[in-house]
Image (cartoon, rainbow, N blue to C red; front, top):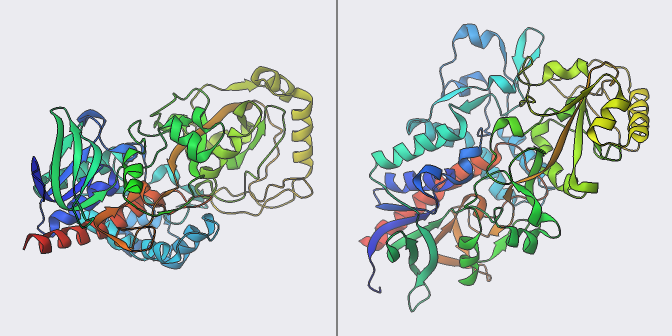
Length: 496
């Protein structure tokens, strides 16, 4: 091997959830690990800093109690619907339009609980996801798979995993961006060239784990791969996920998979900054309990097709293609208790909005076509069918006869004050990435394993079309653990 400045067994590129899980797993094999973090220490962690929870399978309360103590008195007030492995795997395949690799999705679902338990042994602390629950009679109920969340969410995840890396003897290099890979005469990747505060350094490694995220923060690459208008979309997550590591791997023959023209893109409040918004308050997700209209006053989607965690990641793309690339979430007084800050709900609506006592006045204030908007609401109200309204479950209370019916939670908008929240498209992460084995080994364009190089997290292509909320973190943890274990074992074999 060529002369290098540093040597390690495993080099992990990227210090978010996936990369840190890989680092901890590799350290547990006894391997030495160096992590490269492109960002300065203050901004470390990639998109993980902006995340909320892991989705995982469980059979009931006893499984949840392996992660956190739940007193009997509290448990008596909780309606815990099982979320079996088969349901999680179905959700993953269904939201990906059945195009994802089934083996990958099956492993993610099957190993999700065990991976959460592994995280717990490494210091992860959990709490009940109170904000995500809805009252069902006298008990609080949750969308299956969402009962628990890490304490302090993304911040807590990073705090826990960095502490585990430190405890196990791993090293983190900040302001350290991968520039190129080192390859021996046989084509084996044997290290990396890194741009550091001290200049360019070379690091030799028996195993290299790429976990540097997608290309969502690069306007140029968004336009190149996602298409027209994506260069002006807002970026919810880290400004450092700009895709250079991904394209470096392509240069060395890595194959691709996932939807390169697709991404996780949701609605964000129109006042959100252009990048690194993150704050819950700018991420409004109670839209299933109202309607969404464009500036012409027309509905364009079924707001109640499913729970928001099954639909939100695809709506940003739709809004980007609307006139003015803007839409409006509309609520009346009857639904205001469903908005956090006003009695509970998915996310906060304590953000700038328009409020009026008539629909016409609301439309004028928001910049919506008043006549069309009033007609849309009248038509919607008239199409609502009888049934029991229950936001804690798919209640089947729907409209009938509209061009786009609402299949659940259809409640008339007839009680002032009316509210309009302007929303735009916010991209979270990209779906296209590298093709890998289930242990994270990168494949070349002939389907052969590229020796010593692994890819995990957003950088490994997995999703298509849509995404079920919380599964990105789970993917990073499950396959981060698997790749770290494999990379560490490989490195130790090379060392001996």
